[in-house]
Image (cartoon, rainbow, N blue to C red; front, side, top):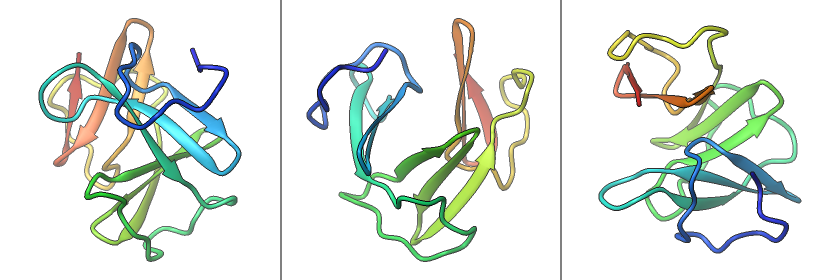
Length: 120
């Protein structure tokens, strides 16, 4: 559930994968490193970027932007866009070319990082 006002980056959140737009700023509830999930807010392009288009990571954390059913992640200087599978993948399944996806499935969230799905 999205807060009525844009949260501060780094504030605790509860539902990994929640994405909330505030104008061109999008805040996503992510779990990076230790501790619980926190809000990561990024300045996203108004229109979905083209695959491979240049981008800049903010603070070393991949920018995550949602455009309808598509998600785009700025990683290593270029945009990678993909759509979540209709069915939840199996934990550990291959997800090459879909890096950065955070897909909610009922009470489970599956993330694609490093070429494999991580579902919890």
